[in-house]
View 1 (cartoon, rainbow, N blue to C red):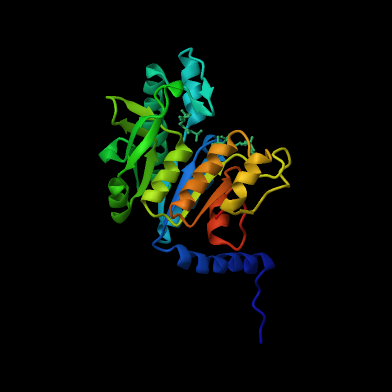
View 2 (cartoon, helix red, strand yellow; view 1 turned 45 degrees about the vertical axis):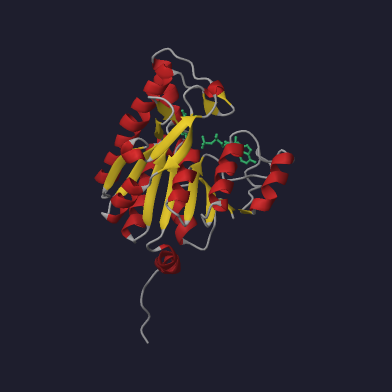
Length: 289
Ligand SMILES: Nc1ncnc2c1ncn2[C@@H]1O[C@H](COP(=O)(O)OP(=O)(O)O)[C@@H](O)[C@H]1O
Ligand SMILES: CC(=O)N[C@@H](CCC(=O)OP(=O)(O)O)C(=O)O
């Protein structure tokens, strides 16, 4: 029989594509919430990789919902107006002037830029903020944080309607106040977890700027690929989970306890990490379940 002249790389490429089939079947019609922020949002190259992953997932029939942060952009804008950023327990202390900037940057600039890039690259995205159709309602979390909100209710209907109509919903995390006539600033990881629960999502993906949860935060070779919820208190007690990782892991724990099948902390610096995580045999972040 005549040999077909194909190179190994072509065969390998075909294998990678074929490997995706069972995963596409697994996630087809299911909801995946992706929290997007940090480095992967700032670098143009990584931004394009994340956005093309999101469009691909959408086109193969996965209901992808994007929840975005934008902490660095808020800090940059505050610096421009001569205001220093202050964080209390990892949350931005938010006075009224800061709240106005948070709303402008998240709902105006970051949300609309993401929607525009998704649309330019062939997606059909629609931007929403937590105030649209009462998506996120909140009350003051604690006076020590200023206008930082604690989400009291999630009404996901606007997101569900967008998904049903074939759009990719892109959500910014400014909530409508219920205890006062104000908007509240919500940490994007927290909002993504709450939305994942309300949508009964299959998976929550939190993109960040480290490999995942590391046994030694200074050594990227010490990734913990799978962490059971029961292990989390011990890891906090032993000081393995520290700083910014504490609220992130807490969001994952809360979402999994409330019905999300698993939550993954994923490195947004690795190009196409979302595709590798979802559609291949390789898990590359930390999965909490
Ligand atoms: N065990 C750990 N593994 C990985 N990162 C950790 C760990 N403990 C603390 N961290 C810190 O948590 C940070 C991620 O949290 P954060 O900066 O809030 O993320 P983001 O800005 O992406 O929301 C890492 O950059 C790292 O400095
Ligand atoms: C209360 C609080 O801290 N809100 C965050 C909201 C944005 C965010 O969470 O952005 P990242 O995911 O990029 O950090 C802030 O003001 O920075």
